[in-house]
Figure 1: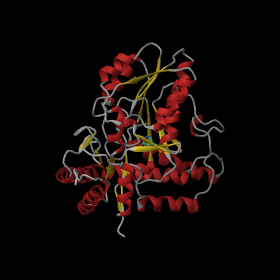
Figure 2: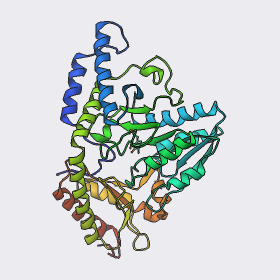
Figure 3: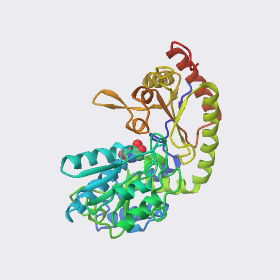
Figure 4: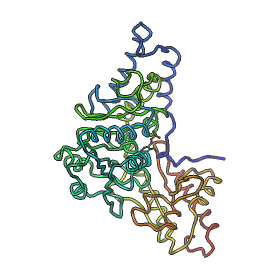
Length: 389
Ligand SMILES: Cc1ncc(COP(=O)(O)O)c(C=O)c1O
């Protein structure tokens, strides 16, 4: 069976050029980057070269980028590290939103249990935060603001630049989760006015298991993993030099092809949207129509029209060889409607009848035509009244 991958937001395939760059380091450079002998120095040189590439890709300085095990660790480091530093100055409030990734929401929840107050800035029907609401929520006790640049489920882009200016004026550090945006749209730490930022290599054709936290010089933030003095004492543990090389290569390639990929997926997404609109009457499109990542298209079947189970649709699509994602998450073995879709005002049943398509540089028109035809069949079979068919 011909398989079609339309889940590029979950992860992307490894670019063969990234693989090649890593293979050579895996094969020849085993030294510990902290060792003073020649083996160590060789690894260190390669590591710092990789850091430079990653830093350049986000407009950061070399000494402001620290490797982590991925986006989740970078988010945890940002939230817990900024909160701990703030707490020492008597600040015990966190400002965030309800549509953040769980890598932000769960550390925030843990801090709430430990005594922090959390203010959730509301989002509109597109999942966007109003910078004016952020301003209203800041106070003398605010330790940090954490708001994502682009949402991983519906693609909506926040005005982080404006939010960053507000936070800076108030003297409060801003963290932004840019894991989903990096490699898809330009991410520049100075353009965005952020103090701390998270990125992850596997979202843009790099390896899994490596990401980075950007920390603007002068930001008060505690280290996260304690142990050795690696990563300038910010993140202990022997550095993974081959993965850092892969991350750097993916960043370089991502920069080179950003415009091309952006145009490619924009055309494809328009095609997909038109096709879906023509095939399914009354479909709901989630996320902002224009301020949105170019590769994500998230749809819901309105529960007042027909009850469709998103996970059954996903499985039906998978049987036809098409990989897409639903709007639910498995928490403790039970399927829950997406917190993002509920936050933008979808009811539970509609939120459960959701499919996220996410496109990539290898996606073709033919694949999308096939996917929509497959969905038509799967939906036709799943619904009794045939309203969407
Ligand atoms: C917005 C966002 N934040 C954080 C993460 C976690 O990144 P990682 O998979 O590198 O831990 C993801 C991954 O899906 C994401 O989309």
